Image (cartoon, rainbow, N blue to C red; front, side, top):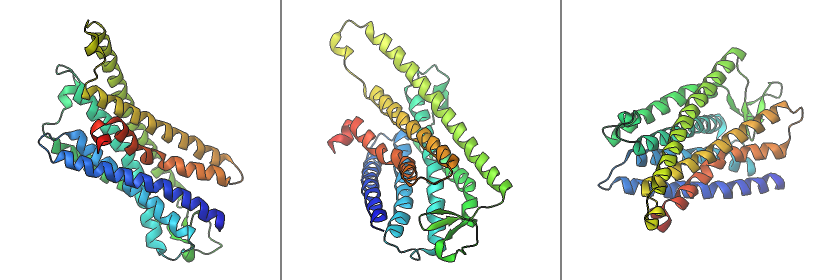
Length: 294
């Protein structure tokens, strides 16, 4: 019990920092968006921070309840909502990160390029893809609504897989594969968009760097425009996202291949699931001068 409480305390402390950081990002970009220059990227960052907060809360609440031994506190509905929101927001984080990269690539693209034709006429039009992301991820995660139970409502004879005080009751094999394939397709499509948009931005940055090298004014050579700084921030953020995503996938495959459940590796996997959403606000703060001053 003491070891579980110690692990929960560490997880809560780290997650608490993530919640505070994402709340700071959310409030600051909402304040920026109220100004005269409304940008689509601000709405995307607001949505990303909001999604990160919900994801962390959906992880923190069950962990806290389990650490204090209050298994009956939220009952079945609490288990269902926490697991469902965690999966939905994890999918939203992937989709929103890809959209952020795409919006940034369109913003810095030359006027005569094909990418520029994708630019939205109004910043508010970005709400349509965000609404689509909510509908898509809500549907993909629907199977959890029927197969998550609280430990107090389970019989010992029932097959189940434990996760803190909530249990996932295995569903029909065909249904399980359908939802698994849908999640894999979603991740592949949006990471493909992320990869193409990031590659295009790297190409534009290379061209910009080559152009600047021809300038004779050395003072201008070392000046970096706000647009270029924003691109570097997004690219660094996407590298962070890909690192945590694929590392967590590798740990998940390794854990599934092991006969005995390794608690240490499982704890590392749980951290990797939320590592990106915890570091995300601090990466943005460190690379955005306005946020750093605040």
